[in-house]
Length: 191
Image 1 (cartoon, rainbow, N blue to C red):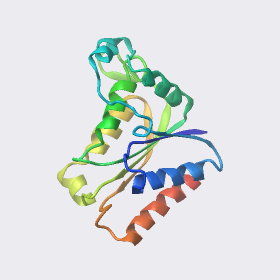
Image 2: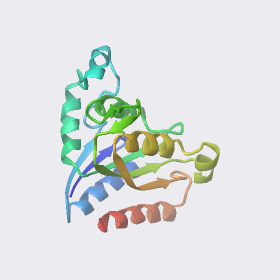
Image 3: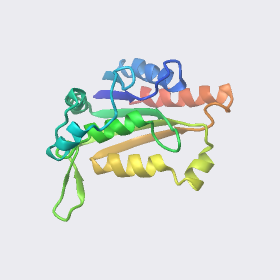
Image 4: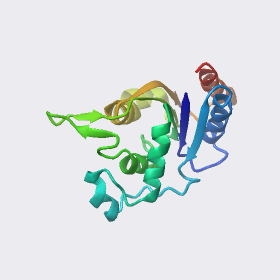
């Protein structure tokens, strides 16, 4: 099984980055794994005019898009790790989805106009935030679950195996962060 870890946290010493490095280390023991940090790779999330003109053809003017699509094609499981800012993913990850998950590559329009996914892959989603889970899930109706997991990933044919949602990332105790970290690492050891 091959894993592609897609990390979009800009700070190299963040909880997210430490976690994705550990996941990479653990997964390497049994599987193939590739790490892609969108910030370190210099990905430009802006959908420019040239790429937008090509959008309906399933192409992009951004040369990195084809490279990223190749990495996705080679992977069986995508691991998305990102902080939640203003209730959703960072702009760099949203831009990645807009520019890489193109029509004809990730999805098509079916007979009745409904979108049909072209992938047959799995995903694990890891999110961190300061907002308490109760507020995020109940008051905000969990935008990541509804928009990213249930809409984007599922529409494209990607089955989410697990969503780790870690709240109080700054105000929680060190033990809480350590327990969350270890729980995720143990999950990947069993895959």
